[in-house]
Image 1: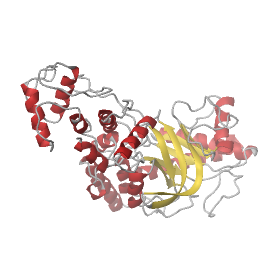
Image 2: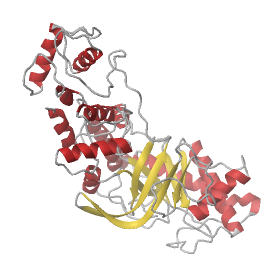
Image 3: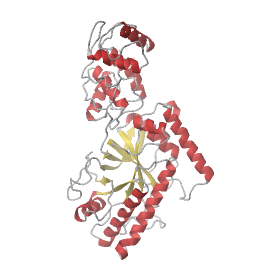
Image 4: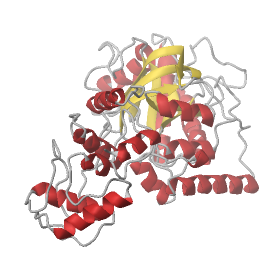
Length: 465
């Protein structure tokens, strides 16, 4: 994994610097509340918007199933924007603390950068690379980055003290960047000789203390290591010494097998460990990828964290159904369930003069249809054609949506696809089926079929027919 460093000396910021940091974070959050990112672009992530509106960054990475990448240097905003609009990734690893990081200068990693990525829907994986296992031959890297003390005295108390200290530093760094409590902070323990007893046992106590201290400070504990060393170490502790050690909440498996899953060989990690969406795997090591004309050297990851991507079930107009496998044409005099659906959705668009709960298509609905169509740039009409659903159903969707996204915008996207005759399960989660449906739609419109819904895609969806 790529070890990063922030562009900081490690000292606490001055009061004026802290004030500037808080002001920057507030301005970015305000932009997100207004639906704007850098350059006035609409932001994404329904949960992110809600939390930013409340004055806080969202917890990260939260509940997510999808692709991620990590890189030595936190990319510039321009690179992040290019990859948001064209790559499959919606998660990015960032090194926030630890004296053994390879990239000690991090000019891009600021509170404003963190808030901007979170507001746009990125899931951040904050990583610390501090003291490494005493038998890891590549460390210390600089001379001022001690390794984990292997002294077994008092149950490896020196190693535990190091773990406690490093966790406190990681939390301080996270808070400085606006990464809120409840988020998962990952410790990067590079591969080591698992057969070296004092090396292994001191590393295990270090991780145990890291986990305890993070929990005390209100953060969740994540742990990255190779499948054959650190991951096997914590899984063996789970099975062979149940209840003795405080274990990570989430594990990040380094296993470059090219498989975008969260599994690895059972001799390293048993199938009953960290189940239910508490794993991610780095399945491909350093290589160049180009998206949106921007090339970055990355590691690839697959995430199933926080229980996986999921969406709250939507309720409209007190329980009027809006989810169907097809949307039909409606005419005056009809009495259908989808008449109430249409009235409900129009009322949510500010159209009045209709008895929403009444399934009868009367004059009030005809007038409302004509008002909405005229307002939105469609040809006036008093009946509702099947093609009109195409323009109405996506209304309210915005930002960037791709594999792993969830929430209100995804619900709207899925309904809009169904109205276009593209079947997709209505789940509110941008899963594999939704990805395939989006690519089908993109191909039908002669767009690049990359499975990424951008603000310009929403504009096209809004036009309907």
